[in-house]
Amino acid sequence: MRKLLASLAITMGAVGAVHAQTNYQADADPAAGQEMAQVCAACHGQQGISAVGTFPNLAGQQMSYLAKQVMDIRDGVRVVPQMAGIVDDYSDQDAWDVAAHFSRQNASLGQADADNAELLARGEALYRAGDMAKGIPACSACHTPTGAGIGSAVYPALSGQNVAYTVSTLQAFATGDRNNSPNNIMGDIAAKMSDSDMEAVANYVLGLH
Image 1 (spheres, one colour):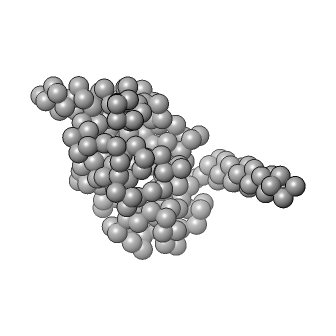
Image 2 (image 1 turned 135 degrees about the vertical axis):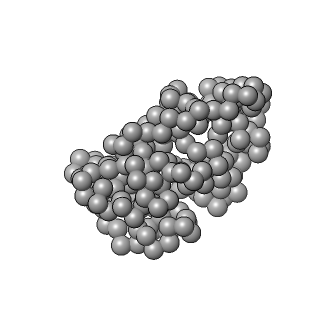
């Protein structure tokens, strides 16, 4: 009986969390988010496209993913030293408003390095089919064939993302420095990737759209 009640409580809690997220997303105000996002421009660009490869592009990103990252950084679940103090006072609604603003911007359209045929082929193979020998699933399964991501599952868009940022993110997941993906799925995957695998995938998704 206790197990049944515990299971019911967990289920109801999950349903409540999804319901709350849906409410925040529906009420998100991109105009309010645009005003708050002015401070973000120094690293992420006025339109959410960063001029510095180590900082991520935010334009066109899935709203649910962006909101989650802001709240995770605020709550210390994800540590980003460059953002220390910036979102400490954000409410959940603030996070959704900023996310709504950036999600409506035109995403960056990058171009993969096509001069290195081996690198490009490896990146495409990993993204499209994975590497079963290494236990690496296809990136497209969660991030879609075009790299758009899946908002309902909080899977981010990868299309046009900066190479340096993608590589550093995969490295952080691999070492456990970052572990805030759903069920730490990215930690498990990245730990199986070599440095060259990471470079290959990062190069491929830069030009994916």
